[in-house]
Image (cartoon, helix red, strand yellow):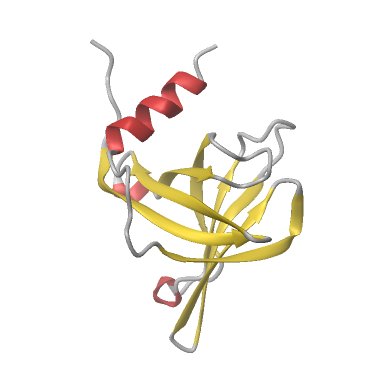
Length: 135
């Protein structure tokens, strides 16, 4: 039997608007918490990111982690470049989260926790990631 990675118990979901289109961002911790890695999936966005699951590493933007300034970065883009998918920034206690789309990386799109999350099975998201990365 293959060694399966440890998964977080919950899939966090965020919603944003791409023009008039609502889209969803799902985030699932993968591996040990100390590794600070997640799987991120965009659903319903008009971009090359749509539907795929990306493995990302948290990169802190300052030494004071209590400020919650970080970026989830992946190396799994089609061109092999590093790309910051999800940005968290806290200014004086006001937390904001933004995503950046692959085809328009200069424009931040605000995302907010989804009020009524759905399809929250961590195993489903993990299996989709594993299946898409089989070569």
